[in-house]
Image 1: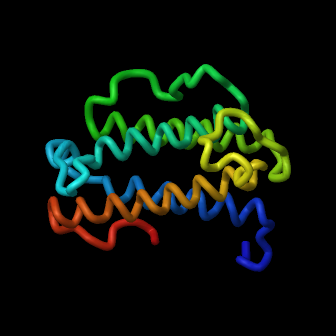
Image 2: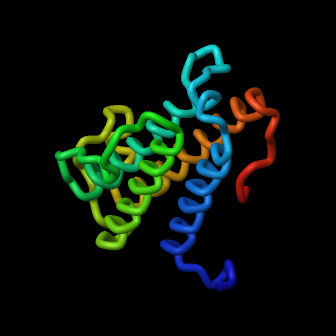
Length: 158
């Protein structure tokens, strides 16, 4: 499909999936011991950020779009390793795609949003744009420890 032939929905889903792929590409092959190390002043680790990103998917698509209060993870089992966290993230992304298929971009959302985004995130379109923003930001965050931990740079499709 030519870029000019994409619908708005196709374009949004394309960029969301591209950023999701960037996240997993950056951590692919990172040693589990390194994924547990913090090399930034705030103290977070690549493993923790992967767990966070799974929560981002679950929160915005399961809770905010679908309105499901269960907060039930798509991946069952411990998140004791980077491989576990990455598998859980991929499972959340797959569930998010399934949820997104059932809603129109203009459908309203109002459930369980952070106070600073109420009024800014009003539709499914807004949710998708926000998750693109947050995923891209965290993909960049993951680039930094990866380079500091093992010197690898330029990872991912972007």
